Image 1 (tube, rainbow, N blue to C red):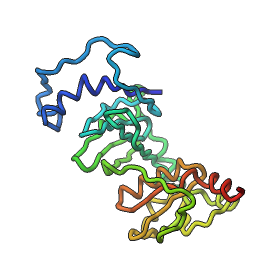
Image 2: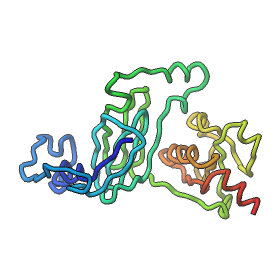
Image 3: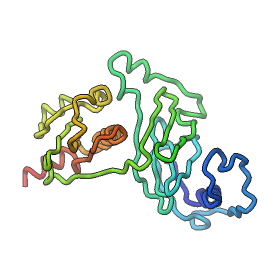
Length: 241
């Protein structure tokens, strides 16, 4: 498991941010004559915070305002709060979400260099959106401040909200919930036209992981999306009480 360490921010980026320049190597020169980076490191020495990441990456972290954007193998972009190291959101971008059948299987076999992986390209930001290119062929554009919204089950369907179930059909058959629309996650990007943009969308999966990815997909496209807390498993427990 890769660890993002806060000292990196102070040593390599804080002086840049204070200079007021944002761009390739800040002002384009890559020179920081006033910087005083620490030269010794230990678990409790010159470390502001440490945050566990889901995997490694060769991409460089990007510091924009109060956030750090990093990648993780094989296809994930992550937003981290600069001050605390808290992970604010993360979005996986697997080929399987845009392809199906033999076409999706073929694209999923993309190969990477033994020492590089699929996340060697550093993310870039225009101040509003964060862009990332992955070696599996996916290109992702994310709203910089598309933070996560969670809806408790007692508010399910209220205020005109549409409940979206992104579980697979066999899961729905074994344990249905009162959803308005059912679209498996791997079909979501190709079926966005089925979702209203003028109503809140509350998303559910089994435990929350797929609903999280679905909420990121919808948020980036202007939908007012939120997660139903805890997934269908929580809903089943609530009904039994």
